[in-house]
Image (cartoon, rainbow, N blue to C red; front, side, top):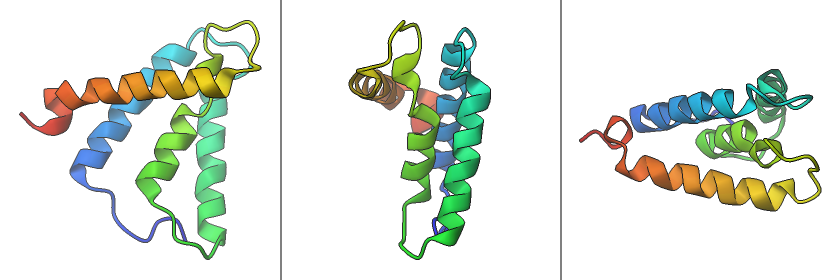
Length: 104
């Protein structure tokens, strides 16, 4: 089961920042908009409830929220996984200096 532990306050803060980021980025998207992202999150949670393997809920939720970020503002999504990985990494690295997240 995916949710075998409670998310920490810091993880919840990061997830909140990711949600804000994804909402803004997908606001202009067609097809793979924010409602699609939420649908994927729901599917991930359901899968997590049915599998026997342990998964880190924080990692799984981050992945579900950011899974299509590479399709935003791109006419073709053939390489959206590579582009999305770079965009997600850049965004997550920006959180390191965010006082809201790290509690400065």
